[in-house]
Image (cartoon, rainbow, N blue to C red; front, top):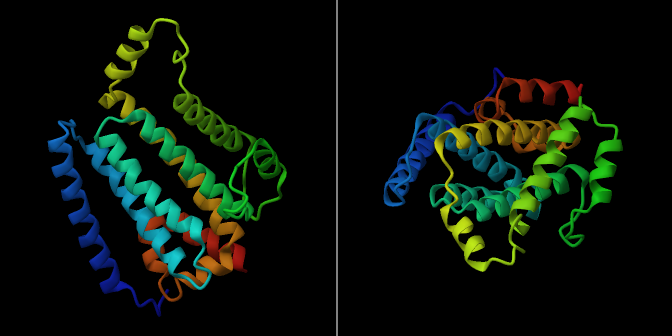
Length: 230
């Protein structure tokens, strides 16, 4: 990384993310959202991924699902701040599906991520480690997001009960901490698979800017990139 050209670019990105987090805190106040350190850390993690996907979208491929991921992440943040848990899971499902498109090279024209795509991913020989437990975590999280979207008690005969249950769902701090940890685990697995399966392209998007990639995703992901490119 001796020829890395990103010192000023990283500083500008850090300032951009700091300003972004300040804006999120303002929105949190308007929504009466109890903003904590774990929220700030999580939204910083999401902001870095927005920047990462901007680099991938700006590359020569202009792959549309990276643009969709950027949009999903913005709306994902807003749905958490506004306590709209159903929309949070709508965005999470889309995030998982578009990561899988990037990994499995499924076009947006083949719009539905089906059980077959999951099975193919499970059987695929990746250029990095991908354990059964990691696959199970991804599959479970996708199932949770789909289940929440379609509703558990939504078919109950008691209409007022369902309405009350929908209205009083709150995303409290302890639940958010657990959710953030689980979501970040899923995303880090996906990051690894995207990098391993698209190593040459990712490297090109961060040509002489590997320090930027390290700032956004961590040293382990950059080490993986160099390992796959050997």
